[in-house]
Length: 399
Image (cartoon, rainbow, N blue to C red):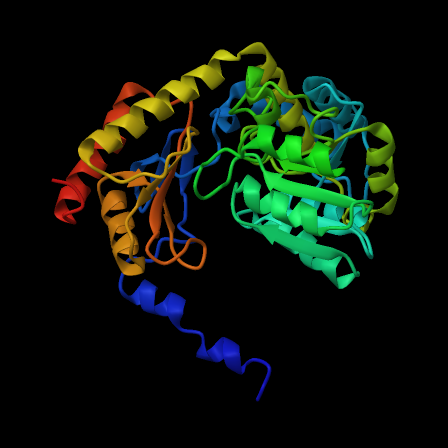
């Protein structure tokens, strides 16, 4: 069979497009924070990871513009060669200080960070132990590690009994790394980090946490899941990974921890060495966002209040939600096509959300995923709840 035959036979996307309910690759014509323009009209954005609303902050925009004026639009090379600027090294020092660890290394994207760190650390004959709900970037890193001879084991989501069973099965003296999301991106659930850390210490494992959806959201001043549970980056959780495309309002990723470990990654990770450096404008935007996060912790508290209000409002209307305690609110619909149709009606009512169907979630748990923004005004909150109430009644999901 011809290599491209499978491409020509692929029809799932076209079928949904033809039905007029395709929810992906939607074009945003203008972006004004909590409100965007789509299909020629303004809609409330309830499907963005711009949790603190900093992508439209004047200081962030100004910092990015000034960096481009001073350093150009690109570093035009890898960090290893000509792509390390004073912007990069300053950001890494500031992030390390923010998290209370020795060192930090910035990658070009968050996906690339997990892809670059995991197989660099977990090598032939060593063990990677991963939560089944971990992000696809962790899964990719695990595939590469396995291809190079590492043992990859997965445990049921947030199940500490299942994790301990795996740890018991691994040779006691074998090098092993447990990797988990801090906040699971589809469900919005928070990892049982105290239980995980306790098991890691008991069985001699190291811990790496992906804080993509926790940084700027959980913990003291937005320092993430470790802080949320009163744990420490470094002594309790050896490696902290995060992205810049969410609360930090930019693009990129980082790994932070003990200096000797970060240096090892810096000089051995192919994904880091052979990738072009973060663009100057992106780096400057992160630095400005971090400064605002440190200066204005009230943004994080406001985000929590908004999430609580919308969560309780949807539950009071009769919707079934996965309980998570974060600004990610998954509303269970339970069917692929109904989820697409529900998404479309919400957009027609002026609210953009994310439609999540199998295989991203199990059959029966297809859902509408809201991710909320700290800069909502009350009219935006009311608009989201009003649209859900109207469409939910149309679909007989609520009374």
